[in-house]
Image (cartoon, rainbow, N blue to C red; front, side, top):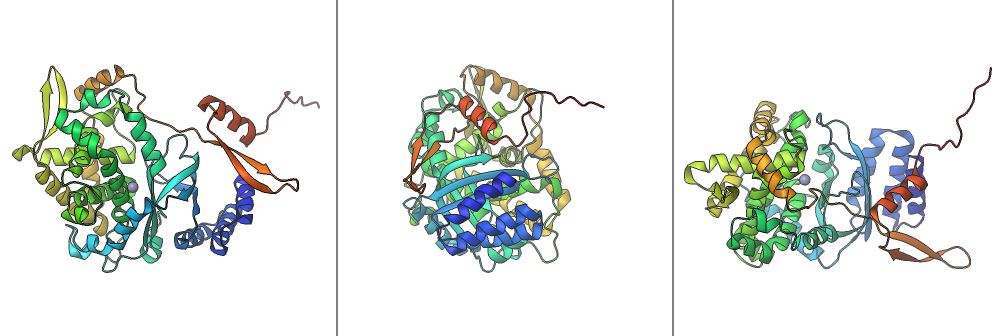
Length: 436
Ligand SMILES: [Zn+2]
Protein backbone atom coordinates (compact mmCIF):
# COMPACT_ATOMS: atom_id res chain seq x y z
CA UNK A 1 0.00 0.00 0.00
CA UNK A 2 2.97 2.32 0.60
CA UNK A 3 3.97 1.69 -3.01
CA UNK A 4 0.44 2.39 -4.25
CA UNK A 5 0.48 5.68 -2.32
CA UNK A 6 3.94 6.53 -3.71
CA UNK A 7 2.66 6.25 -7.28
CA UNK A 8 -0.64 7.95 -6.56
CA UNK A 9 1.30 10.93 -5.18
CA UNK A 10 3.23 11.09 -8.45
CA UNK A 11 -0.06 10.89 -10.36
CA UNK A 12 -1.57 13.71 -8.29
CA UNK A 13 1.40 15.84 -9.34
CA UNK A 14 0.48 15.51 -13.02
CA UNK A 15 -3.32 15.47 -12.68
CA UNK A 16 -5.23 16.84 -15.68
CA UNK A 17 -7.38 19.14 -13.59
CA UNK A 18 -8.14 20.11 -10.00
CA UNK A 19 -11.00 17.65 -9.73
CA UNK A 20 -8.84 14.70 -10.68
CA UNK A 21 -6.19 15.84 -8.21
CA UNK A 22 -8.81 15.83 -5.48
CA UNK A 23 -9.92 12.31 -6.47
CA UNK A 24 -6.37 10.98 -6.22
CA UNK A 25 -5.66 12.74 -2.92
CA UNK A 26 -8.83 11.32 -1.38
CA UNK A 27 -7.81 7.84 -2.44
CA UNK A 28 -4.42 8.40 -0.78
CA UNK A 29 -6.24 9.42 2.43
CA UNK A 30 -8.17 6.17 2.33
CA UNK A 31 -5.04 4.04 1.84
CA UNK A 32 -3.30 5.83 4.69
CA UNK A 33 -6.16 5.46 7.17
CA UNK A 34 -8.06 2.36 6.03
CA UNK A 35 -11.19 4.37 6.79
CA UNK A 36 -14.06 3.09 4.63
CA UNK A 37 -15.88 6.40 4.83
CA UNK A 38 -12.89 7.98 3.10
CA UNK A 39 -13.22 5.34 0.40
CA UNK A 40 -16.88 6.29 -0.08
CA UNK A 41 -15.89 9.95 -0.35
CA UNK A 42 -13.26 8.99 -2.91
CA UNK A 43 -15.84 6.98 -4.91
CA UNK A 44 -18.21 9.97 -4.97
CA UNK A 45 -15.49 12.32 -6.21
CA UNK A 46 -14.39 9.73 -8.77
CA UNK A 47 -17.89 9.19 -10.17
CA UNK A 48 -18.28 12.93 -10.68
CA UNK A 49 -15.07 13.34 -12.65
CA UNK A 50 -16.33 13.08 -16.22
CA UNK A 51 -13.96 15.50 -17.90
CA UNK A 52 -10.59 13.80 -17.55
CA UNK A 53 -9.24 12.06 -20.64
CA UNK A 54 -7.11 9.77 -18.50
CA UNK A 55 -8.92 7.84 -15.78
CA UNK A 56 -8.31 4.87 -13.51
CA UNK A 57 -9.75 2.17 -11.28
CA UNK A 58 -7.76 1.56 -8.11
CA UNK A 59 -8.81 -0.24 -4.95
CA UNK A 60 -10.15 -3.35 -3.23
CA UNK A 61 -13.07 -3.55 -5.63
CA UNK A 62 -14.73 -6.82 -6.65
CA UNK A 63 -15.85 -9.82 -4.58
CA UNK A 64 -16.39 -12.20 -7.53
CA UNK A 65 -13.69 -14.60 -6.38
CA UNK A 66 -15.04 -15.01 -2.84
CA UNK A 67 -17.86 -17.56 -2.55
CA UNK A 68 -19.21 -15.56 0.41
CA UNK A 69 -19.12 -12.34 -1.62
CA UNK A 70 -17.44 -10.48 1.25
CA UNK A 71 -13.74 -10.06 0.53
CA UNK A 72 -12.77 -7.77 -2.34
CA UNK A 73 -9.55 -8.24 -4.25
CA UNK A 74 -7.32 -5.36 -5.31
CA UNK A 75 -7.38 -4.24 -8.92
CA UNK A 76 -6.30 -1.34 -11.06
CA UNK A 77 -6.66 -0.18 -14.66
CA UNK A 78 -5.19 3.01 -16.05
CA UNK A 79 -6.97 4.08 -19.22
CA UNK A 80 -7.72 6.88 -21.62
CA UNK A 81 -10.87 7.75 -23.52
CA UNK A 82 -11.56 6.47 -27.03
CA UNK A 83 -13.31 9.62 -28.25
CA UNK A 84 -14.66 8.24 -31.51
CA UNK A 85 -16.17 5.02 -30.10
CA UNK A 86 -17.57 6.93 -27.12
CA UNK A 87 -20.15 8.51 -29.47
CA UNK A 88 -21.95 5.16 -29.30
CA UNK A 89 -22.12 5.07 -25.51
CA UNK A 90 -23.20 8.72 -25.43
CA UNK A 91 -26.18 7.78 -27.61
CA UNK A 92 -27.06 5.07 -25.10
CA UNK A 93 -26.70 7.22 -22.00
CA UNK A 94 -28.63 10.07 -23.63
CA UNK A 95 -31.54 7.64 -24.03
CA UNK A 96 -31.19 5.98 -20.62
CA UNK A 97 -34.60 7.15 -19.42
CA UNK A 98 -36.34 5.67 -22.47
CA UNK A 99 -34.74 2.27 -21.80
CA UNK A 100 -35.70 2.43 -18.12
CA UNK A 101 -39.31 3.41 -18.88
CA UNK A 102 -39.81 0.69 -21.51
CA UNK A 103 -38.15 -2.24 -19.78
CA UNK A 104 -40.27 -5.32 -18.98
CA UNK A 105 -39.86 -4.97 -15.20
CA UNK A 106 -42.65 -3.99 -12.81
CA UNK A 107 -43.01 -0.20 -12.66
CA UNK A 108 -42.60 -0.27 -8.86
CA UNK A 109 -38.96 -1.30 -9.39
CA UNK A 110 -38.10 1.32 -12.03
CA UNK A 111 -36.23 4.53 -11.48
CA UNK A 112 -38.50 7.56 -11.97
CA UNK A 113 -35.50 9.56 -12.97
CA UNK A 114 -32.34 7.86 -14.20
CA UNK A 115 -29.43 10.00 -13.18
CA UNK A 116 -25.70 10.03 -13.44
CA UNK A 117 -25.37 7.19 -15.93
CA UNK A 118 -22.19 8.10 -17.74
CA UNK A 119 -20.60 5.81 -20.26
CA UNK A 120 -17.50 5.86 -22.37
CA UNK A 121 -15.35 3.57 -24.45
CA UNK A 122 -11.78 3.41 -23.21
CA UNK A 123 -8.36 2.08 -24.12
CA UNK A 124 -6.66 0.25 -21.27
CA UNK A 125 -3.07 1.43 -20.95
CA UNK A 126 -2.01 -0.64 -17.93
CA UNK A 127 -3.56 -3.55 -16.04
CA UNK A 128 -2.80 -4.59 -12.47
CA UNK A 129 -3.93 -6.72 -9.56
CA UNK A 130 -7.07 -8.73 -10.25
CA UNK A 131 -7.31 -7.16 -13.75
CA UNK A 132 -3.98 -8.63 -14.81
CA UNK A 133 -3.20 -10.67 -16.81
CA UNK A 134 -6.86 -11.59 -17.34
CA UNK A 135 -9.05 -8.50 -17.50
CA UNK A 136 -12.70 -7.44 -17.66
CA UNK A 137 -14.08 -6.09 -20.96
CA UNK A 138 -16.39 -3.62 -19.24
CA UNK A 139 -16.62 -2.04 -15.81
CA UNK A 140 -19.33 -0.18 -13.93
CA UNK A 141 -18.37 1.39 -10.61
CA UNK A 142 -18.66 2.20 -7.78
CA UNK A 143 -20.26 -0.91 -6.31
CA UNK A 144 -21.79 0.79 -3.31
CA UNK A 145 -25.57 0.85 -3.83
CA UNK A 146 -26.24 4.05 -1.90
CA UNK A 147 -23.59 5.95 -3.86
CA UNK A 148 -25.01 4.66 -7.15
CA UNK A 149 -28.47 5.69 -6.05
CA UNK A 150 -27.55 9.25 -5.08
CA UNK A 151 -24.57 10.04 -7.29
CA UNK A 152 -24.84 7.58 -10.21
CA UNK A 153 -22.12 5.42 -11.69
CA UNK A 154 -19.42 5.43 -14.34
CA UNK A 155 -19.46 2.75 -16.96
CA UNK A 156 -16.82 1.75 -19.50
CA UNK A 157 -16.33 -0.64 -22.39
CA UNK A 158 -12.66 -1.53 -22.88
CA UNK A 159 -12.45 -1.76 -26.62
CA UNK A 160 -8.74 -2.44 -27.16
CA UNK A 161 -9.31 -5.58 -25.07
CA UNK A 162 -12.45 -6.72 -26.93
CA UNK A 163 -10.69 -6.06 -30.21
CA UNK A 164 -7.74 -8.19 -29.15
CA UNK A 165 -10.06 -11.04 -28.13
CA UNK A 166 -11.81 -10.78 -31.47
CA UNK A 167 -8.54 -10.90 -33.41
CA UNK A 168 -7.21 -13.79 -31.35
CA UNK A 169 -10.37 -15.82 -31.97
CA UNK A 170 -10.20 -15.53 -35.75
CA UNK A 171 -9.40 -18.85 -37.35
CA UNK A 172 -8.66 -20.71 -34.10
CA UNK A 173 -11.13 -23.48 -35.02
CA UNK A 174 -13.47 -22.89 -32.09
CA UNK A 175 -16.52 -21.85 -34.12
CA UNK A 176 -16.00 -24.69 -36.60
CA UNK A 177 -16.08 -27.17 -33.73
CA UNK A 178 -18.98 -25.83 -31.65
CA UNK A 179 -21.27 -23.72 -33.85
CA UNK A 180 -24.21 -25.63 -35.37
CA UNK A 181 -24.14 -24.42 -39.00
CA UNK A 182 -22.90 -21.84 -41.49
CA UNK A 183 -26.01 -19.73 -40.80
CA UNK A 184 -24.86 -19.05 -37.24
CA UNK A 185 -21.20 -18.83 -38.27
CA UNK A 186 -22.03 -16.16 -40.88
CA UNK A 187 -24.10 -14.21 -38.38
CA UNK A 188 -21.17 -14.28 -35.98
CA UNK A 189 -18.61 -13.33 -38.64
CA UNK A 190 -20.70 -10.41 -39.80
CA UNK A 191 -22.05 -9.00 -36.56
CA UNK A 192 -20.55 -10.50 -33.42
CA UNK A 193 -17.88 -7.89 -32.76
CA UNK A 194 -20.38 -5.02 -32.97
CA UNK A 195 -23.12 -6.91 -31.15
CA UNK A 196 -20.79 -7.98 -28.33
CA UNK A 197 -19.49 -4.44 -27.82
CA UNK A 198 -23.07 -3.20 -27.70
CA UNK A 199 -23.89 -5.93 -25.18
CA UNK A 200 -21.06 -4.67 -22.98
CA UNK A 201 -22.21 -1.03 -23.35
CA UNK A 202 -25.81 -1.92 -22.45
CA UNK A 203 -24.77 -4.25 -19.62
CA UNK A 204 -22.51 -1.69 -17.95
CA UNK A 205 -24.18 1.59 -18.69
CA UNK A 206 -27.89 0.72 -18.47
CA UNK A 207 -28.12 -2.76 -16.95
CA UNK A 208 -26.21 -2.19 -13.72
CA UNK A 209 -27.54 1.37 -13.52
CA UNK A 210 -31.20 0.41 -13.93
CA UNK A 211 -33.91 -0.31 -11.37
CA UNK A 212 -34.23 0.52 -7.69
CA UNK A 213 -34.63 -1.19 -4.33
CA UNK A 214 -37.97 -0.84 -2.58
CA UNK A 215 -37.77 1.43 0.48
CA UNK A 216 -36.25 -0.33 3.48
CA UNK A 217 -34.72 -3.22 1.53
CA UNK A 218 -31.25 -4.13 2.73
CA UNK A 219 -28.80 -3.77 -0.21
CA UNK A 220 -26.95 -6.86 1.09
CA UNK A 221 -30.11 -8.97 1.38
CA UNK A 222 -29.03 -11.39 -1.37
CA UNK A 223 -25.74 -12.14 0.42
CA UNK A 224 -23.58 -14.71 -1.37
CA UNK A 225 -25.92 -14.70 -4.38
CA UNK A 226 -25.85 -10.96 -4.95
CA UNK A 227 -22.93 -10.82 -7.44
CA UNK A 228 -24.40 -13.57 -9.62
CA UNK A 229 -27.89 -12.05 -9.61
CA UNK A 230 -26.53 -8.57 -10.27
CA UNK A 231 -24.56 -9.83 -13.29
CA UNK A 232 -27.68 -11.68 -14.50
CA UNK A 233 -29.75 -8.51 -14.20
CA UNK A 234 -27.25 -6.51 -16.28
CA UNK A 235 -26.81 -9.26 -18.90
CA UNK A 236 -30.57 -9.72 -19.26
CA UNK A 237 -31.10 -6.01 -19.68
CA UNK A 238 -28.53 -6.02 -22.51
CA UNK A 239 -29.90 -9.19 -24.12
CA UNK A 240 -33.48 -7.97 -24.00
CA UNK A 241 -32.75 -4.58 -25.53
CA UNK A 242 -30.32 -5.71 -28.18
CA UNK A 243 -33.22 -7.10 -30.19
CA UNK A 244 -35.32 -3.95 -29.79
CA UNK A 245 -36.22 -1.85 -32.87
CA UNK A 246 -35.02 1.17 -30.87
CA UNK A 247 -31.44 -0.08 -31.28
CA UNK A 248 -31.73 0.07 -35.08
CA UNK A 249 -33.45 3.42 -34.87
CA UNK A 250 -30.54 4.80 -32.85
CA UNK A 251 -28.10 3.34 -35.38
CA UNK A 252 -26.39 1.12 -32.78
CA UNK A 253 -26.54 -2.07 -34.85
CA UNK A 254 -26.37 -2.34 -38.65
CA UNK A 255 -29.07 -4.97 -39.25
CA UNK A 256 -32.15 -6.53 -37.70
CA UNK A 257 -30.30 -9.85 -37.66
CA UNK A 258 -27.24 -8.55 -35.82
CA UNK A 259 -28.51 -9.34 -32.31
CA UNK A 260 -28.90 -13.00 -33.28
CA UNK A 261 -25.12 -13.36 -33.40
CA UNK A 262 -24.91 -12.30 -29.75
CA UNK A 263 -27.90 -14.47 -28.75
CA UNK A 264 -26.39 -17.54 -30.35
CA UNK A 265 -23.01 -17.01 -28.76
CA UNK A 266 -24.56 -16.33 -25.37
CA UNK A 267 -26.64 -19.52 -25.39
CA UNK A 268 -23.83 -21.70 -26.76
CA UNK A 269 -21.45 -20.31 -24.16
CA UNK A 270 -23.86 -20.50 -21.22
CA UNK A 271 -25.17 -23.97 -22.03
CA UNK A 272 -21.93 -25.57 -23.17
CA UNK A 273 -18.67 -23.94 -24.08
CA UNK A 274 -17.91 -21.98 -20.91
CA UNK A 275 -17.53 -25.39 -19.27
CA UNK A 276 -14.07 -25.53 -20.87
CA UNK A 277 -13.01 -23.35 -17.92
CA UNK A 278 -14.19 -25.86 -15.31
CA UNK A 279 -12.16 -28.85 -14.14
CA UNK A 280 -13.76 -32.27 -14.60
CA UNK A 281 -16.16 -33.16 -11.80
CA UNK A 282 -16.39 -29.59 -10.46
CA UNK A 283 -19.39 -27.29 -10.33
CA UNK A 284 -19.48 -23.56 -11.14
CA UNK A 285 -18.27 -21.09 -8.48
CA UNK A 286 -17.43 -17.83 -10.25
CA UNK A 287 -20.25 -15.24 -10.31
CA UNK A 288 -20.17 -14.33 -14.03
CA UNK A 289 -20.10 -17.98 -15.05
CA UNK A 290 -22.96 -18.86 -12.69
CA UNK A 291 -24.90 -15.96 -14.16
CA UNK A 292 -24.35 -17.08 -17.77
CA UNK A 293 -25.41 -20.65 -17.07
CA UNK A 294 -28.37 -19.43 -15.01
CA UNK A 295 -29.71 -17.34 -17.90
CA UNK A 296 -29.02 -19.91 -20.61
CA UNK A 297 -30.41 -22.90 -18.64
CA UNK A 298 -33.46 -20.99 -17.46
CA UNK A 299 -34.29 -19.86 -21.01
CA UNK A 300 -33.68 -23.37 -22.33
CA UNK A 301 -35.95 -25.00 -19.71
CA UNK A 302 -38.70 -22.39 -19.95
CA UNK A 303 -38.73 -22.47 -23.75
CA UNK A 304 -38.69 -26.27 -23.94
CA UNK A 305 -42.43 -26.65 -24.62
CA UNK A 306 -42.08 -24.40 -27.67
CA UNK A 307 -38.69 -25.81 -28.66
CA UNK A 308 -37.18 -22.32 -28.51
CA UNK A 309 -33.67 -23.65 -27.92
CA UNK A 310 -32.53 -27.25 -28.29
CA UNK A 311 -29.51 -29.47 -27.94
CA UNK A 312 -29.06 -31.13 -31.33
CA UNK A 313 -26.78 -34.08 -32.11
CA UNK A 314 -24.67 -34.64 -35.19
CA UNK A 315 -22.00 -37.33 -35.56
CA UNK A 316 -22.25 -38.01 -31.83
CA UNK A 317 -21.51 -34.35 -30.98
CA UNK A 318 -23.83 -31.96 -29.14
CA UNK A 319 -24.71 -28.51 -30.50
CA UNK A 320 -26.91 -25.66 -29.36
CA UNK A 321 -29.59 -24.64 -31.86
CA UNK A 322 -31.88 -21.63 -31.50
CA UNK A 323 -35.18 -22.18 -33.30
CA UNK A 324 -37.04 -19.05 -32.28
CA UNK A 325 -35.07 -15.88 -31.59
CA UNK A 326 -38.14 -13.75 -30.88
CA UNK A 327 -39.47 -16.11 -28.23
CA UNK A 328 -35.99 -16.28 -26.73
CA UNK A 329 -36.06 -12.51 -26.42
CA UNK A 330 -39.37 -12.60 -24.56
CA UNK A 331 -37.95 -15.26 -22.20
CA UNK A 332 -35.01 -12.96 -21.46
CA UNK A 333 -37.55 -10.20 -20.72
CA UNK A 334 -39.47 -12.46 -18.30
CA UNK A 335 -36.37 -13.50 -16.43
CA UNK A 336 -35.20 -9.88 -16.25
CA UNK A 337 -38.52 -8.94 -14.59
CA UNK A 338 -38.06 -11.75 -12.05
CA UNK A 339 -34.42 -10.99 -11.24
CA UNK A 340 -35.26 -7.31 -10.83
CA UNK A 341 -38.12 -8.25 -8.48
CA UNK A 342 -35.74 -10.39 -6.43
CA UNK A 343 -33.25 -7.54 -6.13
CA UNK A 344 -35.82 -4.82 -5.47
CA UNK A 345 -37.60 -6.84 -2.77
CA UNK A 346 -34.42 -8.43 -1.38
CA UNK A 347 -36.02 -11.86 -1.84
CA UNK A 348 -33.09 -14.02 -0.70
CA UNK A 349 -34.90 -17.39 -0.94
CA UNK A 350 -35.99 -16.93 -4.57
CA UNK A 351 -32.57 -15.60 -5.51
CA UNK A 352 -30.87 -18.56 -3.92
CA UNK A 353 -33.20 -21.05 -5.61
CA UNK A 354 -32.68 -19.49 -9.02
CA UNK A 355 -28.88 -19.60 -8.76
CA UNK A 356 -28.70 -23.06 -7.19
CA UNK A 357 -31.19 -24.60 -9.60
CA UNK A 358 -29.84 -23.19 -12.87
CA UNK A 359 -26.42 -21.60 -12.30
CA UNK A 360 -24.28 -24.01 -10.32
CA UNK A 361 -24.64 -27.65 -11.28
CA UNK A 362 -22.73 -28.94 -14.28
CA UNK A 363 -24.10 -31.65 -16.58
CA UNK A 364 -21.20 -34.11 -16.25
CA UNK A 365 -21.68 -35.96 -19.56
CA UNK A 366 -21.89 -32.75 -21.54
CA UNK A 367 -18.92 -31.37 -19.61
CA UNK A 368 -16.74 -34.36 -20.49
CA UNK A 369 -17.73 -34.12 -24.13
CA UNK A 370 -16.97 -30.38 -24.29
CA UNK A 371 -13.59 -30.85 -22.61
CA UNK A 372 -12.60 -33.62 -25.02
CA UNK A 373 -13.59 -31.61 -28.09
CA UNK A 374 -11.88 -28.50 -26.73
CA UNK A 375 -8.65 -30.30 -25.99
CA UNK A 376 -8.26 -31.16 -29.67
CA UNK A 377 -8.30 -27.46 -30.55
CA UNK A 378 -5.30 -26.66 -28.31
CA UNK A 379 -6.71 -23.30 -27.19
CA UNK A 380 -6.28 -22.05 -23.62
CA UNK A 381 -9.62 -21.47 -21.81
CA UNK A 382 -8.58 -18.01 -20.55
CA UNK A 383 -6.67 -15.31 -22.34
CA UNK A 384 -4.33 -12.90 -20.65
CA UNK A 385 -2.58 -9.71 -21.58
CA UNK A 386 1.00 -8.50 -21.33
CA UNK A 387 1.39 -4.85 -20.35
CA UNK A 388 3.41 -2.62 -22.64
CA UNK A 389 6.68 -1.33 -21.19
CA UNK A 390 6.65 2.44 -20.73
CA UNK A 391 9.99 4.20 -20.63
CA UNK A 392 10.02 7.89 -19.75
CA UNK A 393 12.16 10.18 -21.89
CA UNK A 394 13.54 13.08 -19.88
CA UNK A 395 15.24 16.36 -20.73
CA UNK A 396 18.50 17.53 -19.13
CA UNK A 397 16.59 18.80 -16.08
CA UNK A 398 14.98 15.43 -15.48
CA UNK A 399 11.48 16.49 -16.66
CA UNK A 400 9.52 13.85 -18.50
CA UNK A 401 9.04 14.98 -22.11
CA UNK A 402 7.72 11.81 -23.69
CA UNK A 403 7.01 8.14 -23.06
CA UNK A 404 8.37 5.38 -25.23
CA UNK A 405 6.09 2.37 -25.56
CA UNK A 406 7.44 -1.08 -26.26
CA UNK A 407 5.52 -4.31 -26.75
CA UNK A 408 8.59 -6.55 -26.80
CA UNK A 409 8.46 -8.00 -23.31
CA UNK A 410 7.28 -11.60 -22.98
CA UNK A 411 4.82 -12.73 -20.32
CA UNK A 412 7.31 -14.73 -18.25
CA UNK A 413 9.92 -11.94 -18.45
CA UNK A 414 7.30 -9.44 -17.35
CA UNK A 415 6.23 -11.52 -14.36
CA UNK A 416 9.84 -12.01 -13.27
CA UNK A 417 10.60 -8.31 -13.66
CA UNK A 418 7.52 -7.34 -11.64
CA UNK A 419 8.42 -9.68 -8.81
CA UNK A 420 11.99 -8.35 -8.81
CA UNK A 421 11.09 -4.65 -8.98
CA UNK A 422 7.84 -4.53 -7.03
CA UNK A 423 7.90 -7.38 -4.54
CA UNK A 424 6.69 -6.03 -1.20
CA UNK A 425 8.63 -8.64 0.77
CA UNK A 426 12.27 -8.22 1.76
CA UNK A 427 14.82 -10.51 0.15
CA UNK A 428 17.35 -12.04 2.58
CA UNK A 429 20.60 -12.99 0.94
CA UNK A 430 21.71 -15.04 3.94
CA UNK A 431 19.87 -16.65 6.81
CA UNK A 432 20.29 -14.52 9.94
CA UNK A 433 22.00 -16.38 12.80
CA UNK A 434 20.68 -15.63 16.25
CA UNK A 435 23.34 -15.88 19.03
CA UNK A 436 22.65 -15.90 22.72
ZN1 LIG B 1 -21.39 -6.61 -14.76
